Image 1 (cartoon, one colour):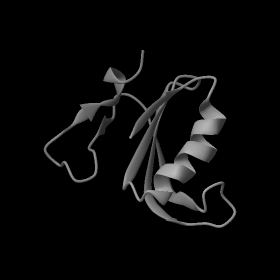
Image 2 (cartoon, one colour):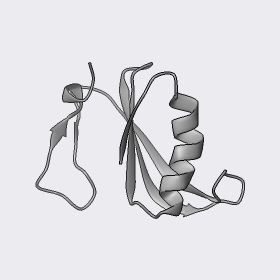
Image 3 (spheres, helix red, strand yellow):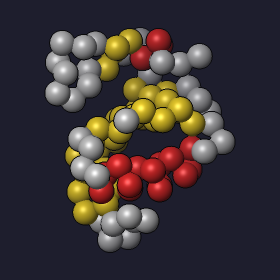
Image 4 (tube, helix red, strand yellow):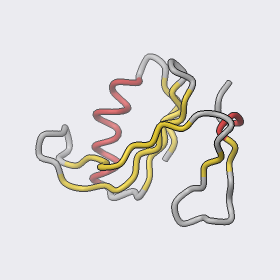
Length: 85
Protein backbone atom coordinates (compact mmCIF):
# COMPACT_ATOMS: atom_id res chain seq x y z
CA UNK A 1 0.00 0.00 0.00
CA UNK A 2 1.35 3.43 -0.90
CA UNK A 3 -0.08 6.75 0.29
CA UNK A 4 1.01 10.14 -1.00
CA UNK A 5 0.69 12.62 1.84
CA UNK A 6 0.97 16.32 2.43
CA UNK A 7 -1.99 17.66 4.41
CA UNK A 8 -3.08 14.14 5.43
CA UNK A 9 0.31 13.08 6.81
CA UNK A 10 -0.72 12.74 10.49
CA UNK A 11 -3.90 10.85 9.56
CA UNK A 12 -2.01 8.53 7.21
CA UNK A 13 0.59 7.74 9.86
CA UNK A 14 -1.86 7.15 12.71
CA UNK A 15 -5.18 5.94 11.31
CA UNK A 16 -4.33 4.52 7.89
CA UNK A 17 -1.18 2.87 9.23
CA UNK A 18 -3.11 1.22 12.06
CA UNK A 19 -5.79 0.02 9.65
CA UNK A 20 -3.28 -1.46 7.18
CA UNK A 21 -1.33 -3.10 10.01
CA UNK A 22 -4.56 -4.64 11.28
CA UNK A 23 -5.14 -6.06 7.79
CA UNK A 24 -1.62 -7.51 8.21
CA UNK A 25 -0.25 -5.92 5.08
CA UNK A 26 3.47 -6.65 5.43
CA UNK A 27 4.52 -3.21 4.26
CA UNK A 28 3.08 0.32 4.02
CA UNK A 29 4.75 3.29 2.33
CA UNK A 30 4.05 6.98 2.75
CA UNK A 31 5.48 9.32 0.13
CA UNK A 32 5.96 12.23 2.52
CA UNK A 33 5.75 15.38 0.39
CA UNK A 34 6.33 17.66 3.39
CA UNK A 35 9.81 16.34 4.15
CA UNK A 36 10.48 14.83 0.70
CA UNK A 37 11.18 11.35 2.04
CA UNK A 38 9.73 7.88 1.74
CA UNK A 39 8.50 6.39 5.02
CA UNK A 40 8.61 2.59 4.93
CA UNK A 41 6.58 0.81 7.60
CA UNK A 42 7.01 -2.94 8.16
CA UNK A 43 6.34 -5.65 10.72
CA UNK A 44 2.65 -5.21 11.69
CA UNK A 45 1.68 -6.20 15.20
CA UNK A 46 -0.97 -5.63 17.84
CA UNK A 47 -0.99 -2.40 19.84
CA UNK A 48 -4.16 -1.57 21.79
CA UNK A 49 -3.19 2.11 22.04
CA UNK A 50 -3.68 2.70 18.30
CA UNK A 51 -6.96 3.54 16.50
CA UNK A 52 -7.47 0.02 15.07
CA UNK A 53 -5.48 -1.92 17.65
CA UNK A 54 -2.47 -2.58 15.40
CA UNK A 55 0.64 -0.71 14.27
CA UNK A 56 3.84 -1.21 12.31
CA UNK A 57 6.80 -1.90 14.59
CA UNK A 58 9.46 -0.89 12.08
CA UNK A 59 9.91 2.47 10.36
CA UNK A 60 12.65 3.42 7.94
CA UNK A 61 12.89 6.92 6.50
CA UNK A 62 14.46 6.67 3.06
CA UNK A 63 15.85 9.52 0.96
CA UNK A 64 17.38 9.76 -2.51
CA UNK A 65 19.63 8.34 -3.86
CA UNK A 66 18.52 5.18 -2.00
CA UNK A 67 16.76 2.35 -3.76
CA UNK A 68 13.87 0.52 -2.08
CA UNK A 69 13.01 -3.16 -2.54
CA UNK A 70 9.39 -4.06 -1.72
CA UNK A 71 8.82 -6.96 0.69
CA UNK A 72 8.36 -10.20 -1.21
CA UNK A 73 9.45 -8.80 -4.58
CA UNK A 74 13.24 -8.96 -4.45
CA UNK A 75 13.52 -8.54 -8.22
CA UNK A 76 11.98 -5.04 -8.08
CA UNK A 77 14.21 -2.08 -7.20
CA UNK A 78 12.65 1.39 -7.07
CA UNK A 79 14.84 4.50 -6.88
CA UNK A 80 13.34 6.74 -4.18
CA UNK A 81 13.82 9.86 -6.31
CA UNK A 82 11.30 8.45 -8.79
CA UNK A 83 8.58 8.55 -6.11
CA UNK A 84 9.20 12.16 -5.10
CA UNK A 85 8.19 15.22 -7.13
